[in-house]
Image (cartoon, rainbow, N blue to C red):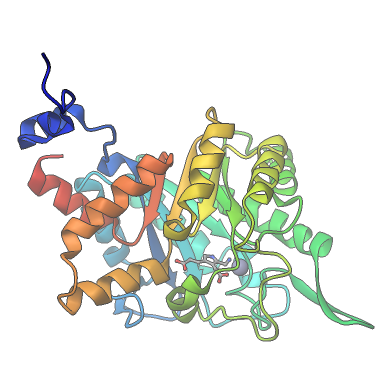
Length: 336
Ligand code: PBG
Ligand code: ZN
């Protein structure tokens, strides 16, 4: 007679070697994309108080090249570039100016490091505009609204400029309707059909972007972003956004933020298993964990593995994270 319990799940947890053999999820430095801030107002790299461990890099600096190279040696090949400027106007023209920070930084990286780094360039105008919105505001008799289709004209110009600089993937983050289609058309008609699009498809109006907006000086000057970013209560709507982006030509789709939206990641992966899916572990998630770790409340390195496994387990193929260098170091010490 078999004695109860005849099934013993603990057999598969008896020692580390067994746990590793039966682990369902794995994480590699090759899955990571590291955000990088290039700032045309600084002369040397400057630490960011609100995003501890990160820096502003001058676009043309050797410091930027060294940073990219050091991370490539850790195994990180993907970099997501954000440009910071003090030359703001209504249109965000510095975003499509060849003397702007992103154009210069990408050109610099390509000149010094060639084609190997996979460069993603964030495409938005909130940090380049005086009003701080991701689209162009216009006055109506009901007050100010964000003009979707006028904004797309600007996005087209930025996309072509970024492609010309040497970006591999244009990454529109403004949540304007039709932005992927507009950018795809602009790229193709400028001869950049091999440049891809990683779309911020399901980007929520989240409270977790605070540190980033501080770093980018990109808080909206009036109102908030809830007329274009998604409502946190919605899941099915994320499928609509992703479907549209795929139809419009997105090569990679994204969910943002990550930790509060693991159900969104899983649902998208189940529905569109053939499309690479990225998850953006945003600035507020980063600083929350950093702070808890500094206070000694959590073992940060352990938490970071758990974080990365959770996002992968939910179904993400790619993780965009400020923790990328630290996760790479942890993976190195535990032997991948
Ligand atoms: C806006 C943009 C945001 C982030 C990247 N691009 C959010 C926002 O200000 O609404 C957030 C990134 C982060 O918090 O790490 N285009
Ligand atoms: Zn924006």
